[in-house]
Length: 91
Image 1 (cartoon, rainbow, N blue to C red):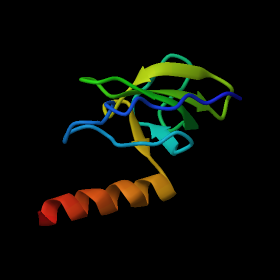
Image 2: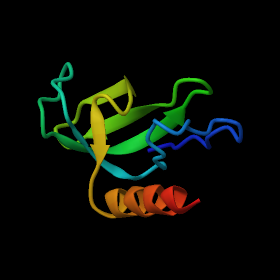
Image 3: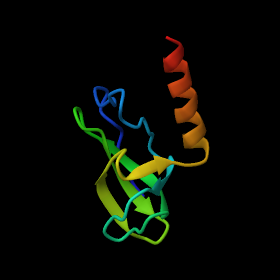
């Protein structure tokens, strides 16, 4: 599978998720083809003002334009995001 390198200016705002290509995520809302709780892997991080992600789910569905309203990180990605939030709160 081919991966695309994110643009250097495509960084999320404070209220958005900061995920990387390959991170594991889970749906928090029903999305066409992926019910709540479906897990998958980030294929593409995209956007300047609106950070969104294309995800390949374990059931084979590939869905784009997912953001902090519909997905949450799991596993290592969740730990990294929580650590970054904690670090930002100290500043």
